[in-house]
Image 1 (cartoon, rainbow, N blue to C red):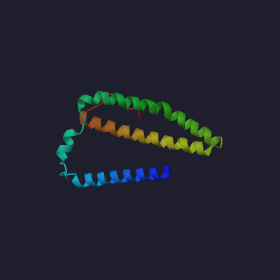
Image 2: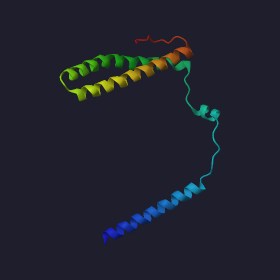
Image 3: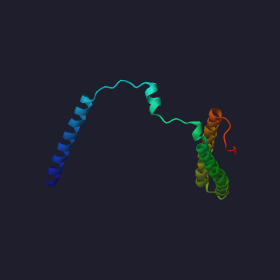
Image 4: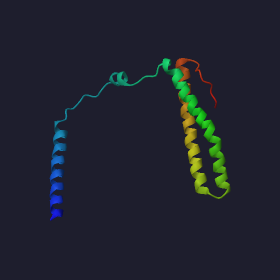
Length: 125
């Protein structure tokens, strides 16, 4: 008996939600596509006044990379020499992700330098 009640309640809820979804899909007004100027007005922009803050963040990321990269390389070599190939492969994949982060940081630093002139932080890579 409880199964029938639960099934009926579930079916009633499904019908109610289904009809609301159809009603909202039908009554939703079509909006005109926004122009590029509308999107650029609301998007946050980088200014050269924010360059020191960005340089500080970049230096922090580079310091972490410089700290962790040798440790992970050593751990991967140790695991591979001990025959733990799965662990070594995971550490190698992690190193690949770290290298991708370094590439992104370098690309951001280059864009900051191009826009604002010479940056205040020194490149470590």
